[in-house]
Amino acid sequence: MSANQPQPQQRDVMFCHECENEWYRDEHGLSCPECHSDFAEVIEANNDPREDSTELEDPDPMYAPDPDEDDIDDLQWTPNPPGQPPGMRVHGTFGRTIQINRDQLRQHEESGRQGGLLGLLGDLVQNAIGGLRQDVEHQAAERIQQQREQHQIVPGDDTLWLDEINTLEARSTSEVESPPPQVQPTGPTVRHITGPGYSMTIASSSTVTGNFGDLFPRNAQQPQPVQLQPTGIDQILHQMIMNIGAAPRSGRPMRDNFHDPFGFDDLFEMFGAAATGGVLGDAVYSQEALDRIVTQLMEQHQSGNAPGPASADAIASLPKRAISKEDLDENGKADCSICMDAAEIGSEVTVLPCHHWFHFDCIKAWLSEHDTCPHCRQGIMPKDNENANQPRHSSSSRIPGAYPSSAGDSVSNPLTVPDSPTMNRPSNSTQGSSVFSRMRDAFGGSNSGNGDTDGSEQPRTREG
Amino acid sequence: MSGNKRIMKEFADIQKDPPPGCIIKLLNEEDMNVWDVVMDGPADSPYTGGKFTVQVTLPKEYPFKPPVLSFRTKVYHPNVTNDERGAMCLGMLKADEWKPPNKIAEVLRLVRAVLAAPQPDDAVESGIAEQFKNDNKSYEKVAKEWTAKYAK
Image (cartoon, rainbow over the protein chains, first blue to last red):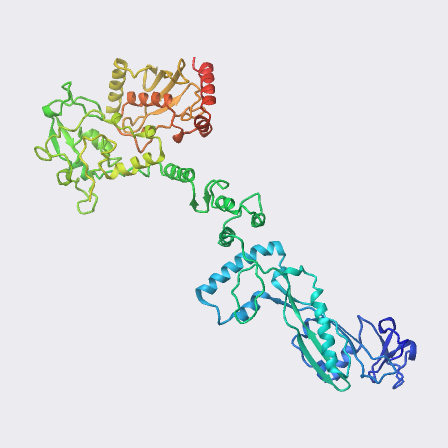
């Protein structure tokens, strides 16, 4: 090789379509020096006539099907300088980039090793974290980039060649553009191709760039790169919550939080303690939020808490009795508490299972709307369906702690106060003050004697 | 009609023995169902010295349906809506909690008790309730101002 060997890239190279000869234009002109054909063309980077002919005609192993061929995006060949026997010297430059989805790769590597629930959980966490990191890393972590390599291919001495390429590879690896701490080099792959008049070696090393803070199982068979682990359980929970579709808090992107050293505050906040009003989807996390929902439900069902009407048959079959002296209060009077008319001794009144009595017309009008005693809210309809049209019989004598019924159930109950006992109910209405006391009144009142709010004079008839 | 009879009876009783601090009249002599109540502001409250007009409307179905209360005097209170209705949210006046034996006199006693002792957890004016709980002095100040301004 002479000292004034011209640089190939500075000179036009001609290609003969007849004999596939190549020569420098400034040395031999536009006609082929071999076959003297005019059917020749200047080889340019973006117009290489050799591609057609060689692919069609040349069964060289050099052009054997290469599974990676599609990934070679920058392939240039420079011919031997004229003066050398054609094909004896090949100068090649490869530039290739291979992108492999890392998830697929890992799945492939780990197939058979990891499956079932554990694998699913691993994938879940992986995706949760990976998904978040994508925001930050712009998907760089998802790729394996095979670095460009440049080889000078020199025929003859293969051994020398390998060394040279390995040296090249070493340099190529160190010249990775991505941040050095996040680079995971793998061993170079050396491919050897020989053919008539040339030999070629392709050494490629792949370099994984991106973030290794993800969770993935160790591969005990191989050395492991240093992995940056998530720094707190809050981050993992955060991401899992994100993964199940909880809306991100407004005003602040999630990934800010990722770098927040005080993540627990945000975690609680995310669970809804403050920022979202204690509501996360269908769940509430604060007393206020629960109160709001209960109040809302009660308002939506304005009359929903009230029991329905009693049946006409049940009302008609309520027992009746006459007012006796024992019904009179300390002033010698007895009133029907609905119409407030006086009930004279001997007049007939209707008695409810709870022993409260009223004029039949008065109580009929009320029970036709609500199956509750106006005093104690106990209903007259039986709880089971056996005697749906019969009034419930007094069960007070069967309940432990019930007041004894001195002369049987059908006679007057001296403990019944005909006057309104409402003022004895400190927990009624706003006096009770909390939603829960109101709720207790509303729910408890209809199916129990409500003795805790209605004074202690009423027998409890809560059914066991 | 029994309802009307009861109303007349209740009205007669309440004239004989009115709840403390209350003067009860009929708004219109021919209509027993609308009562006009003038209530003195309870002592030891920011409403003391004021006279608050409360209109009590008794439905046709009374006593099977609850009466409706409306403050005609503006009042700065967590449990009274600050609007035209001037409604006070009382549990015993709700449709599903009302019981026929309840009497107007008892309702008025309860109204006055709530006026003296607001129930911020059952508030209809949440802003006033917050102030009542967190900045009671400011609440008292405004309530007194309103009393002096509106409840003469």
